Each structure stands twice: as structure tokens, then as C-alpha cells.
Image 1 (cartoon, rainbow, N blue to C red):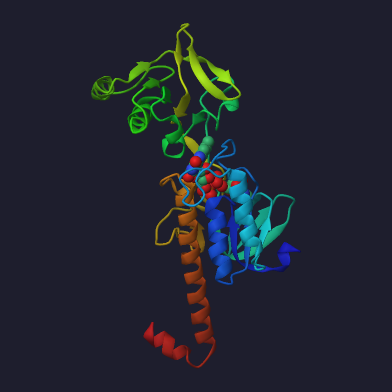
Image 2: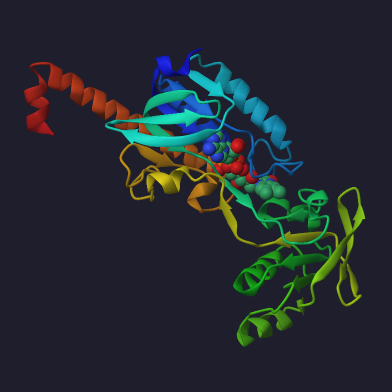
Length: 313
Ligand SMILES: Cc1cc2nc3c(=O)[nH]c(=O)nc-3n(C[C@H](O)[C@H](O)[C@H](O)COP(=O)(O)OP(=O)(O)OC[C@H]3O[C@@H](n4cnc5c(N)ncnc54)[C@H](O)[C@@H]3O)c2cc1C
């Protein structure tokens, strides 16, 4: 298929839960959808996706395969495995440039490009990420209930993470990997809740096959630990929203740039896959509503009854 020969109703950038869900709803609205994805999902290291009703514990790869198979039933939805390198508004439509130089044009643009995590600077942490090093207790806290865990983070981030982990276990050490940078009130609250604070840097993660057993510190200390949760800044996976100057402003995940919508973790709301999928569905609703109104009004403008609509709108 030559992508540039089609004037797509919607171009969806990002095929995680948000983009996939949007493509499904739009497909069922009979919209022509180009769904582009470069396959760098946020949960690349995860083995099991939790808290997604009806799919709790599924492998993220299988989740994506099932979702893509569902989309494949809709001939008007086309999945294209490529990166969108650039996007620009051209009058009333959008033009995107895909890796390989291919150009595609669409009436609406949905950015569901997600975020990526900055792993703490601890040697060998990549081998533990997704197995016993996690970002989100809502995703992976249940498996660690009542076990010894480390909350990793500085300042307010570390404090908030340690506090939130108390829903799953009372055996928590807060590691700040440098000055703790918390207020005396926060320190007192941590002490009351029997959470000790280590400011000394972590020197090593110890365990087997990605499963943590203990953590070593630069001063020679070692503590037992079944899981480490971290709260470090995450960053957008793509520059496109920033380049287009998008800010969320209206209903149904619409932005200040007419025709551009946002969905998923990029919005910075609750970072669960099921929420991302819901945001994708909401964006799809807004996009279809907007396209339908435009077509309706254009048809009216093209006919005598246009006067009726113009008067009654
Ligand atoms: C270790 C770990 C475990 C997790 N476990 C869970 C869990 O158990 N339950 C849960 O609910 N959530 C979990 N999450 C969170 C979950 O991964 C996110 O909530 C979810 O992936 C967000 O979906 P999204 O569609 O917004 O973004 P993503 O899933 O990150 O998808 C974004 C997609 O956009 C693509 N993309 C980005 N830029 C471009 C571009 N320019 N061109 C083309 N494609 C592009 C990327 O390749 C990616 O495939 C976990 C996260 C991590 C890090």
C-alpha cells in the first residue's frame, strides 16, 4: 500500500494501549486510520501486565498481539510499524514523515506516544528492571505484599513513594542515594511509620536471574530486599507534541492545536494501561465527533438546506 495515496481520516502515532484503543474505536466508526508504532513501549521490561480488567497478569507482548489481531479485522485500520519522525499542520490537515522517508496525510492527528523511565544510576539495574525493580506499586505491589522493599527517590518523590508503598508492606527502607532533601515533618512521619532512610549510595543489587535478594551500599552495609520501586522523572518518548505546541485544553483529550489530540501516559494522569486505553477511547470519541460534525456541516453547506443549518447552529 502506498501510504501517501490515501488521505487518512486519522493518523495515530503510538501503538501502546492508548493508540490501540483509539484505533479500535475509530475503526468501528468507519474511519480510515493509519496507526504508526516504532515498538518502544514503556513497559518493555515487564513480564506481566496487572490491573487490566479481564487481562490481569497477561504478558504485555500477548496483550499487544491480541489488540493488533482485533484491529486486523477492520480493513479501514492500517498498522504501520515505523517511527513518525516529523509532523506538521498543513492548512486543515496534517502531514507526517515516517522513518524511511514515507509521507502520510490525515485530517486529524492523535499523539499516543507515551513516556519512558529514567532508571536510577545503579550498576546492573537493567537486568532487574521489570522482574524485581519496578516503577509503580499499583502495577507490581501485590506480588511484594508484606515483603522487604526499597523505595528509591530523592526529596518529595522518595517520600511519596515510601508512603504509598505502605499500602502493600510495612517493611520499607527509603534510599535517597545522596542527601535525602526532605522536610523535618516528612522525616518524622517516616520515623513514626518505621521507615528507615539510607542516604548512602547503592553500590550493587544482589540476586539471581533478575530477582533481588539484597542491596549493597557504598559504606559496606547490606540489607535484605525483594523489590526496589523507584520514583525518578520520566520523559516524553517523542518530541512531536512539543514541536506542535500541544497543550490539553478541551473535552475528549483535545488540544489547543485544532485537530490534534493526546492520549495515554503522555497526559501525565494515572499511569495505568487501562487508563491509557480509556484515554485513547475518549480521544477517538472526540475525533469522530469532530469529523462527523465537519462532514455534516460541509454537506449542508453544499446543498440548499445549508441555510437551515447555518440559521439553526
Ligand atoms: C516496568 C513496568 C511495568 C508496568 N506494569 C504495568 C502493569 O502491570 N499494569 C499497568 O496498568 N501498567 C503498567 N505499567 C505502565 C504501562 O506500561 C503504561 O501505563 C502504558 O504502557 C501506557 O500506555 P501508552 O499507550 O500511553 O504508552 P506506551 O505503552 O508507552 O506506548 C507508546 C507507544 O508509542 C510509540 N511511539 C512513541 N513515539 C513514537 C513515534 N514518534 N513514532 C511511532 N511510534 C512512537 C512507542 O514505540 C510505544 O509503542 C508498567 C510500566 C513499567 C515501566
